[in-house]
Image (cartoon, rainbow, N blue to C red):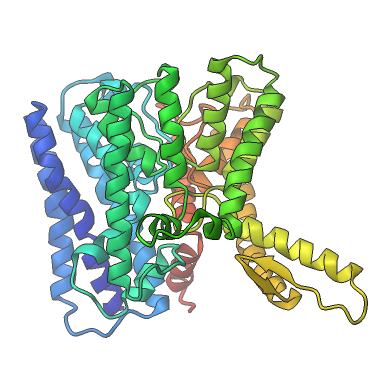
Length: 486
């Protein structure tokens, strides 16, 4: 347990450092009243983190089981600490209607969890009326959460034994370079570079500087928080077009980015990756299918909005270019399919990941070929440029199916639980959609989340967002540990 506490102590430094970095934003925006809340947040995080580190000196390296416990406990505590700026602003800040929701600790926690998990669901009706330091805090939490709090820690602290287990505990499977630290630094360099490019492109497209900064951070993080009241519905067509490649870049694996930018691997070789091909074909084909389903005329505005919503769904960004509450159930079901699949592994996107979708399809193809094969025919399936035998494909497919099955079970359980705290006239399709949006960290919403969201419902959705961000197993390990089972 001492190893777990030490790891948690390190990770609690992340929200503390974020709060200190947010102090200049509050000061320069003329919101000096917010400084005590940010400093108290920093003190709570850094003080408790340092106390845990100093009392657990001399412990051994983190094992895989311990790393999962560290990830689960740390993400829960970071979300609680991250709720403090919202809650303290509501209690001691100016009397603003938009802050009233945060007087409820459950709703402050909901907003914090949605930020750090880069989901994008919000209980704020008018984000444009939030104090500037809270607008920044929401965007900053999504930017850090999109890449992962553990990755931030591994990038700035000296190498700890067991760093590889910590790296994998945050739902990451790829290593770009030989060591964890070099991999993490490569990811961060790419991420920061893309963030600056995103901000610059949005500004050049016509977004005001403050909006470009906030939305550039949340777009590349595939988060979806905005500082506007209608997401991006009122944005111009050129601005919406600029958002699309930024969202796609965030949902593509950092391994692909590294190979393309640093190693200069030709696109023809990268095209052999099954997951990348799926990303391209599903993004293009799904946008066409959604446009046909909506039956819109061939005009630029409607076409851009449809493509935008589909890209926002498949990348699990959560930006909305249309009011989904007015869409038909069939159109919502199509968008929901994209939310379930999500982006690529090793990206900032959510969902079950296209790698697992590809493996399930490959397993199905392998079984069909085996049924058709003659007794002496050798059946193989091509995957990422390699020819794999049916047994190996089946094993990979079983692993993918196991996680997808658990996701589906939790989704249904979440819907059942949430129905107890929603009005009886709520459309069931909307409950399914918003529950999936929370669990798969999408952020697209039919409007269930808002200032009137029940506190119990807010906590249920918060738990689903954490489960989805850590891909279930770390939190399940935590539950088993609390119950006294390893």
